[in-house]
Length: 178
Image (cartoon, rainbow, N blue to C red; front, side, top):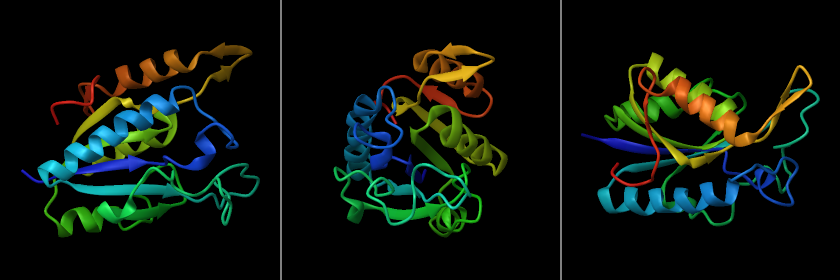
């Protein structure tokens, strides 16, 4: 069984000092590092997805900025960097072609944000026929406001994990056993 680890948008703008610091991003990074180590030990392919905003009015992940860069903790030489311009990591990228080329059908997904690019990519992977495990504790998000009510990041994260689990993927709570 060939597997790949897909790390979505773990970029400087999502960390303290960036333009969109996320709740729980440091914990997500620590768990992502464990996943990378485990993937290397097991011979899984590793893909680093990097979002570059091209949308008019975008406020973060701007081209040629420090915030758009993948976090410095990553040694990207252990994997492949794929750039995207949409929440879906498959849309107008080489990700699916590279997975097919390597005969990969099983994916481990983690990253940011739980409610946006992670959710969209997991659903797209399901639609494309991939078996997906989602590393819940290696994902992060932010508080959201809806109709004047602030939804706490932990609740946003939990709601999205609950909606994905069982149909679109298997949500794992701890970064072990992949």
